[in-house]
Image 1 (tube, rainbow, N blue to C red):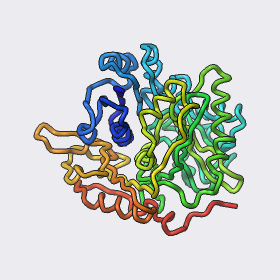
Image 2 (cartoon, rainbow, N blue to C red):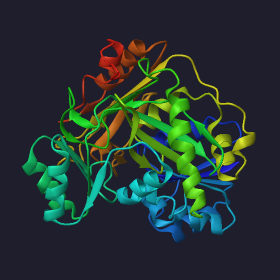
Image 3 (spheres, rainbow, N blue to C red):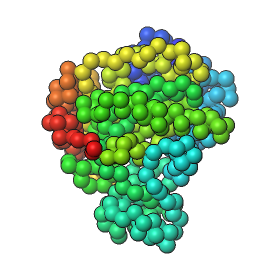
Image 4 (cartoon, rainbow, N blue to C red):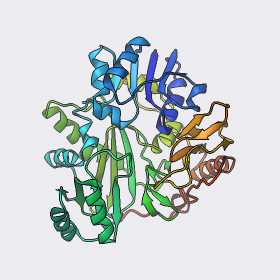
Length: 415
């Protein structure tokens, strides 16, 4: 199988590792990729947000499967363009990707499907935003209605900050705060059949103890030793299958990766958000534990044959990933600094570039991830932090508490 993977971040490096490990993959092409992916695949340039360019590259390399990593190309219609060329694509259509492209649309789908989620109002001006903030009270949850690279959400007790975020975004969804530990569940689907992957937990705030602004994610771990038994079955029954059925009813079936962001509240699981692709950095830990060949799984979803796919197999133990971020991230990350120690197994490249002189340089806010597995969560955590300690990047920072509460048994699901 010849596979084309679109994207160049940490998620795509993790996907490339999984795809390259599949014996069915004869050739892996990644566009545009990054220096970490370069040892696994042939790198090609492409304007990822240009559907015609992605489709043309798929034809040129004679791809048997195209895997589209980031959300922006999906919302732009890259999967549609590839499929129009007769090539299987893993990723939803532009219409179906609106589940991530518009928070308002996602709420409409959840309401129509009877999916448990937070009450919410869509607001386009200061007056309507003020009424919504009055309705729900603090903590205030204000979400950019469109794509925001994981940084469009503000959760704050400060009314002024909430109002400022709403004003800056223009069109926002303001919703009630959901109290309880958060869970990320990835579901591979061909629009009808659906296979859940291992639940994971990520860390969105920049600082230890969940302090500071939201980011694209500072770390993650899987599995979740504290998760209630039957959680995945419940979410598949009450969230995933009703959502897929509603998308089919509308004539826009969702095929690809449905990311369900959940809060486990005292009233049960509630959906915080849907995404239309693998999450970053949860992908790093979930795929590190997946034993089932990845390309075959994604190809089954892309070709409507997922119902016939064998049950998924998982490795024993746990996985932890810790993000190393550039100085100034998330507000104004500094780029161009030299990186030393990133050429070891388990170091995932997210925002790196190779300079003309051959040195590795930072090229984004989230620069690298130290990703490790272990026989249990504590061992995986120790190994991930050992990787991080071996990375030299001036001014960089990382959280020191990834998975700590889970290891210490300090996470409780509300009754």
